[in-house]
Amino acid sequence: MEDFYHLDSVKNIILVASAKGGVGKSTTAINIATGLNQLNHNIGILDADIYGPSIPKMLGIKEKPKISEDKRFIPIEKYNMKTMSIGFLVDQNTPVIWRGPMIIKALKQMLSGVVWEGVDTLVIDLPPGTGDVQLTLCQKLKISGVVVVSTPQELALIDAIKGINMFKKLNIPIIGIIENMSYFINKSGEEIDLFGKGSVEKSAKKNSINFLGEIPIDKMISKNGDNGVPFLIKNNETEAGKKILEIASFIDKKIK
Ligand SMILES: Nc1ncnc2c1ncn2[C@@H]1O[C@H](COP(=O)(O)OP(=O)(O)OP(=O)(O)O)[C@@H](O)[C@H]1O
Ligand SMILES: [Mg+2]
Image 1 (tube, rainbow, N blue to C red):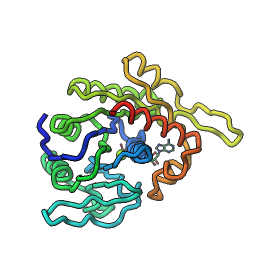
Image 2 (spheres, rainbow, N blue to C red):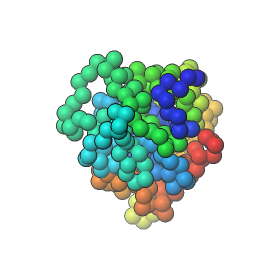
Image 3 (tube, rainbow, N blue to C red):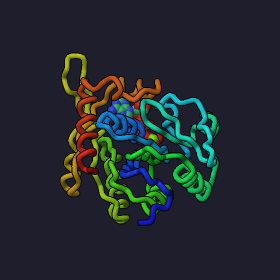
Image 4 (cartoon, protein in one colour):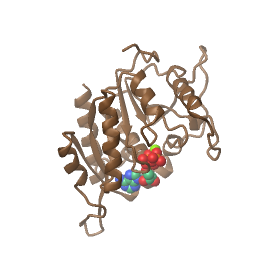
């Protein structure tokens, strides 16, 4: 495929998707990126959620990107990862009220109009849904694979499978599916099943997709997101941290 966006140094492009909103795509994208960075990938994170960018808040970035001599945005570097989001250019409380074609224009700008040189693995945090953004990225970029995030509830799972079927139709390799917010560990160390742990794995088997693992509910995952620090920066030894690292290391092997 023609490298439409001149991402010359980028060897791997990983999409993080789920057709359903709020299941933890952005959180998981950042933590997988951090895990891959710990495995020596030069990471770029592209926030492809134009209407609801989460990356600036989740990485604690308030500054605007500088412009290079050849008039491209210089991605902002934080936690040893380069990142670009429409949220760097628009005030946090200002909604982006654009029609589809404008969204796609902005998306293209964030690919070809950004100095991604030096990045070898680009992790793209997708918006919810199976729309224009997903379609454009899949048709215009050489995607290494997609990681699908679901929670155990049937409502989320139905949408996740819908998303997977879209990627299959577009011939995008499915790296696998993650069960996020799978269970909760209480103070006595007991595992509490809140939403139906195991349903994602079952569905993965049924649909012949790799199951990448379960990530428990952890207050610190949410807190770190709110505070602008990737959970994995400090929590590698926790149960959730170990699970995320295992997933990152599976992805690392898969794309090599
Ligand atoms: N494993 C987890 N444990 C605790 N909180 C979590 C976990 N995963 C995600 N969250 C929290 O759930 C909320 C939703 O997560 P996030 O924004 O990553 O979802 P999303 O799928 O990207 O949403 P959207 O569809 O709006 O883009 C956030 O507040 C996040 O901190
Ligand atoms: Mg998101």
